[in-house]
Image (cartoon, rainbow, N blue to C red; front, side, top):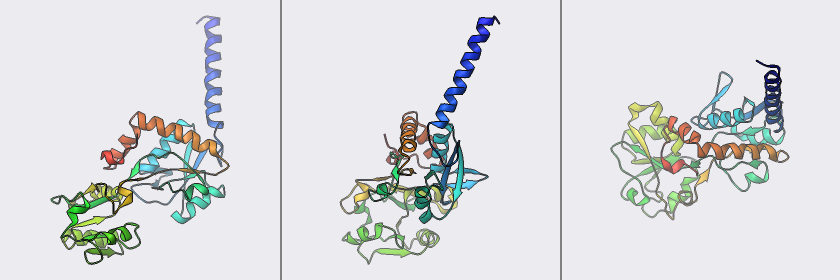
Length: 268
């Protein structure tokens, strides 16, 4: 190699190092070079395993961090403490199926949506319930405290008489398999995960067709990630990567891995 070639190679190497360093330092984080992520171990969204974060949101945020030149470090806590951890500077972001709300956006910066959160009918595989009308003459169930309950009670052919409430998902699934209830609303990601983990349950999910009784089937919630209000650069950087991952199919591949290949989840 000639001396000029060596000089050019050295200059190129130095440029790459400086560029990589600039990419890492362009985003302010609690720990330099590290993205501290508050999670609550709620699959299929997120779970800490060997210092890494698995799950839909876990894989998305890990891919984002990698593109930003950051190492992911999970901080496991209760869901109720996650946003406060971001606000106080103990974590850079929080994940695990967090939906955008206007109230939430007043307390932390929220990213663009990564994917839609879909309301579903969890049912046995030989069932074909897709719409509210399909519930006529049938019993539907959900979990105590879920936001679906007031809307379900307003449906004339559901009301309180054809609605069953459960304290746990396990109890609801047992009734479904025993055919004491025809369909459940658990949240499509949860249903998809359960179907994958327990094929012997013989269950599937169908996204609920848009209807007037359930506003979330028309204006669907979507999953976002956070940053402190005084750190908008982090969310801006996240948004750039989320857009790229939608375009190149990365998010779709991650969702397919978790049995969420249905187009109803995908945001353009």
